[in-house]
Amino acid sequence: MRTVQIRTYCVRAGRLDEWVQAWRTLVVPLRRQFGFEVHGSWVDRERDAHIWVISYDGDQSFEEANAAYWASPQRKQLGLDPAEFLVGEEVRTVEQVL
Image 1: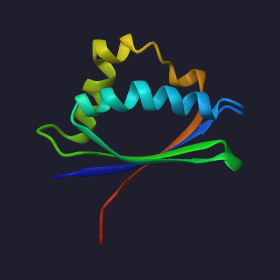
Image 2: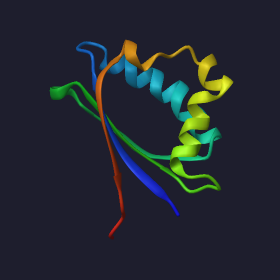
Image 3: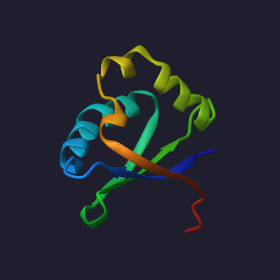
Image 4: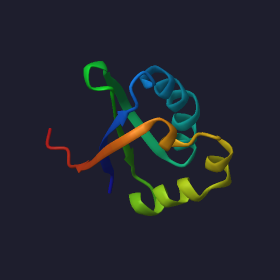
């Protein structure tokens, strides 16, 4: 069963474009390698926010696949520490109704 999350990240002031560029070039390709699908990404400049939609429909649960992603040597090799850019996040798991 496909699990879909809407993720909203609060980004440090002045770092939004830098974060999005790193996320787009590093995180997205690796997420896809691990079987995740990224459905879209938006910025809310007024709130220094990055919003994106991700899903997983594989053999593992979303949580197991996410843990494997974070524990992977490939993730560690990215050299990208989200804490350098992000000051908060909200993750919502949602169900499609249309």
